[in-house]
Length: 546
Image (tube, rainbow, N blue to C red; front, side, top):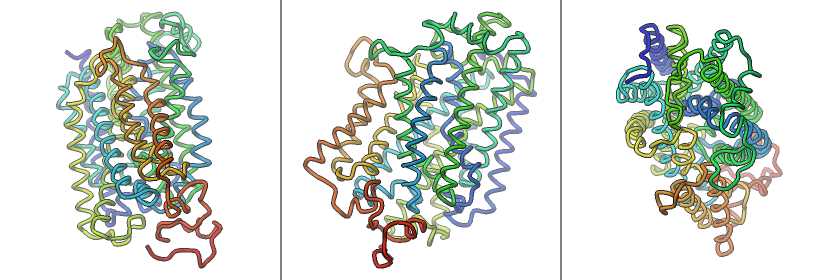
């Protein structure tokens, strides 16, 4: 039974939003004549749109739904830890990762692994990425569909099918440009949804942020903020969550094509850096607003008692429904549908980004197998076969994601969204981050060390995520220890292997941060023009062929 069915006006608003997405896909499809436009929007997207797109890609409906519910369990703990992680991450991404990535004119990030290590490492990176996307997007669809089903009365399977189909079709037709501008619209909806809920609570209860924080301090077990873990089983603390988010952000900006593809869509380094600042700032603001929503709802239901509690708050998973239940129960007809459209939009933005990124990567692999060049520049990429293949991959990936949503429901059990993220798809993100971290910053590690490190990180992530189920212990470790520990295990394993096998000179020349001023051992058309002009190379040093 639904918590409360939507009003007809709410359904109309959601339907209008879906129609708008379909129109955007059709509108941008008229520009799709080359794979360079389809995958990278011809590297001509404004930096502010790229920044908002990055934010929308990473802040899926998982974050939008989980943050307010998490307040009911750990107060403001997660946002304090996340804010600290973002500040440290910003320095590394702005000064090291983006400048290094923008040295190359790649379309797929995994092209780098092939040059830095070897073909098997590149294939491993592509495989891990595809597994990451199918499991991540499947979980996004699952969480969003389950939530909307609970509050709307529409069957779970219907919502899953509609969202998966619409997201796949407009991505397949419109390409990267449609994805980016749709995500700009999504950010507007997310901001508006948070602000609307805060205004409604404030007006109905004549309260403000200090009242909400005091209510959370009094009613949440352990208070509004938890600083230090008592042991490895302590569920969530500032220190633990901060370390986890730092590793997650690092791995995401190192090895996730969904994000890297945005930077490759920028026309220069400065635009890419500006887009990161916009994305990180917007993400932090929305996260803070979502925490404020959680604080406000604690006051609304537990102190002001302005309405009956809509869910069983003793059930961890049901806490994720507090925010969407408030939207449907307490907002006027039409406005509830608009905010719920923001939830659907948040899910679809992540889905379309993932689908487009998989199509980009697999299309690059197809060109490699065919022995054709132009991976990074769009050369020879206007053939009809390329566009047809890209759209077929987009369709197939969307169908796989939609199917995965049903299967992943078996893993969730009574865990909430925040706990499930590092226990599911992020087990594939860590080994990807290990591969790229070793490639960028550890010249001594060769291909064997990289592969062993990535596999070790994956195995340790799975083992840590499901210690109770695998080893029969009383309970699982805290979700905050999974990613940092797996990352360290992967790095140590790679370094041990490097004692036996090290990189060759060709594998590191110009391809690591330490050797970035040397002649890159890759075709010149894959090196950015500003690198060729400014780095310490002579005209005779520069390669002109593959």
